Image (cartoon, rainbow over all chains, first blue to last red):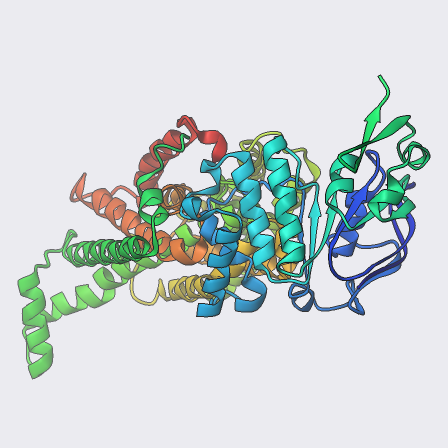
Amino acid sequence: MIQVSGAVKAYGDVRVVDGVDLALAPGGITSIIGPNGAGKSTLLSCVARLLDLDGGTVTVDGLDVHRTASDVLARRLSMLRQDNHLTARLTVRDLVAFGRYPWSKGRPTPDDDRLVAEALAFLELEPFAGRYLDELSGGQRQRAFVAMVLCQGTDYVLLDEPLNNLDLRHAVAMMRLLRRAADELGRTVVVVLHDVNVAAAYSDHVVAMRDGVVVHQGAPSTLMRTEVLAEIYDLELAVHHLDGRPVAVPAL
Amino acid sequence: MTLAAPRPTAIAVATATPAAHAARGGRRGLFAGVAAGVVVLSAVSLFVGVSELTPAHLVRALAAAATGTGDAETQRSAMLLLVSRVPRTVAVLLAGAGMAVAGMLMQVLVRNRFVEPSTAGTVESAVLGILVVTIVAPGVPLMGKMAVAAVFALAGTALFLRILRAVPLRSVLVVPLIGLMLGGVISAATTFVAYRTDLLQSLGSWTTGDFSGVLRGRYELLWLTLALTVVAYVAADRFTVAGMGRDVATTLGLSYRAVMNLGLVIVSLVSAVVVVTVGMVPFLGLVVPNVVSRLLGDDVRRTAPWVALLGAGLVLVCDLVGRVVRYPYEIPVGVVVGVVGSVLFLHLLLRRDARVA
């Protein structure tokens, strides 16, 4: 259970996250959506203790993320940020193996090696395992980072716009993969997404933010309504049902 | 950067596990080979010098030592060996390995390929530190001077990192440029003070690496660099993780700040020790880690032994060249490394895919 209470994060006078209360139950995929500058990524970074809060608390399974020892949290919670540029030349296998660092502390056991191999297989990265990251395409590299985060073996996996820079085919593959991570591996996936249709299609729960506050949350079906979307995006969106799935389409 | 033509090492590791094992085995073999080469060169180094000393002398000296006899000639040989040649060779190896590893740590932690202690203000600060202690407390033993130099080096490096945080880094080359400018400012101040206090000549001995003055009793501090290199190897995985940036390190439960501080202390201490004992050896920390990175990637656990070995080997070769090229006179090793290193550095800068560097 991720519990956010009264979370505030400010840069100067701007409160990017302005009093968010949120309870995310374990299991499934939760998407955080909203317009640019709504505070989605900032909130996720605060949950992952990458940013300090200016007010409020975040607990994961009852542990206050800003007070608990970092290496303890690293076994429960992992996060992938949006832009992952490494200057270090590491192979895909090296990178994924470093996902085991919270457990192995650099001394990998046969168990760690097996989990690395499984993560590589799960993301179909075996053919590239020995390649350096700078020799991969953007989509392959993104998959390598996701493999690292999954390999960390945490119950909670937070991803900040993992579809960034991915074409449609890779974006769909990534969402299916997250679906499998939730369904087959039992992970709790929290993901910041831009595309409301993608969020509706693949999530169990959607949290919509605007101006640093949560304006709507619930099942995707409660989100995909013209009046709800208008409140979030300030935009008229018609919701059609295609093959039983809601699709939001902006007016021309 | 095509996928069809990965680098040789990439091919070796890319395929299935047995091939990976074979590659690792091959790398071990190569490492042993290079290490053997360095040992041979070290032995050669013992017998290169103005005073004549040949392996035959050495054998005679050893025999004499074993039997407790020996004429004046063998005693002279043993003396020369123990007081001058062995200390010099050991100093070369330790300083080379230490500076190369310090350069690698800096590149990993600053996340920039073009920084090393002499392009980040670290060495210049250490020199300023020695100058200050020489003026303020000339009687302080070498250990004390080293400590002061280390504190200055640490402060200078911290200042460098502080500036980096404040300046927008639009290009990878901005980082070393800032470091070089900072170093320039610090060494200008140092030169001014040295000029006013008639210490320009001492300044020269700190800024130009030279092993000709190494004698027993005047280089032992360098063993500290070995200890620091070992510490760096033990903490290798932490450095690699910290090199992936603060966010990745935090996600993996690592205290980024603690690792950063450990790395900077190692770099500053190594720089201070080397400057105090033999003087600055430029470009070494830049060239060796970059070459190793090209061939083996940046997993510190894997690269650190190579960086240390090749750093020691390169300085040894340069020192030998400096001793032989104008025999019986010597060219300081700092000059030889400077020439070799700057050519290699230019090559690294100008190579086609420098943007990934």
